Image (tube, rainbow, N blue to C red; front, side, top):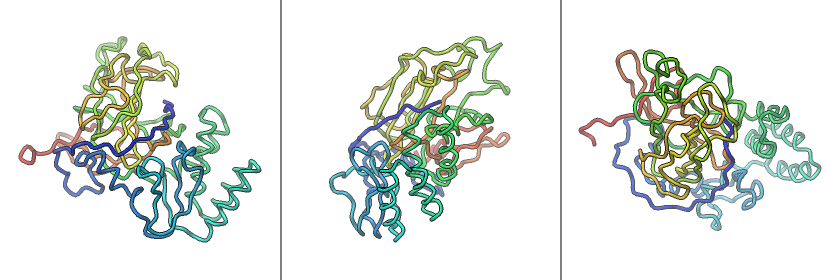
Length: 354
């Protein structure tokens, strides 16, 4: 599904840390063990620079930071203490960056972004090239346009090399099946490129009977929960749920977005009509119910579509701490993306550590 664009400016909201213990041998900080305010404060995007750097803002914040900005060692913008919401990437300064900024001014004034991107790629300035591609994808937005897909195919391999800074819990309770994206329908949209679809399966099926009714689907009406402490940035549940087998419009999906700090949001799509448990601006705790799984928008059957995004609504490869079923046993996985075609569940801390 297509992610609805959000430009949200959120300060450092004080929330208490969860009592959940940190999983052993985690490869990234486990978000539920910290508060939103702590994640904002400790994010690498807010730390003092160790070397002279080029700072790239989120494309959704161009009215605040109009383009890449060079920063001397130790400096970060004091005008934007919650820089976490406007900074997308920070890269060490190189002499080539000076030429990039000069070429950028000339090529964009002449409306030649392709020439600028080509130069960046030729000179191995991949972050610069990706930033320019992101601007173009946001401007076109329509994934059905050939020009959009031309830029998207260049952008995707660059984005695939990056993962979010924290590891999160899953946005569901119980056991869920990660549906393989065999058609590639997620990858063709920058807002869903690293998204996952989750359903509940029993005896190899996601529904009972003939699956003619929404209530026949095991995922229907299941709770969607917050993956860590955060704040709701957007939510709507006004659109109707579609009957099984009848897909609605891409822009008619109900959804919830929650800001978790470190420039990351969780986005949850196709939620059930009139199922919201929260509203935009609400503070939420780890595991708090947000809404119910539904079938609104471009969805053929009830399921949860979710992805981690940055503040420009670009899908980002996630890190999650969970358990995956291996035969009759469950294996704990720390700070990795979800595996397709597998049964997963939230990691449950041992009772003695709670």
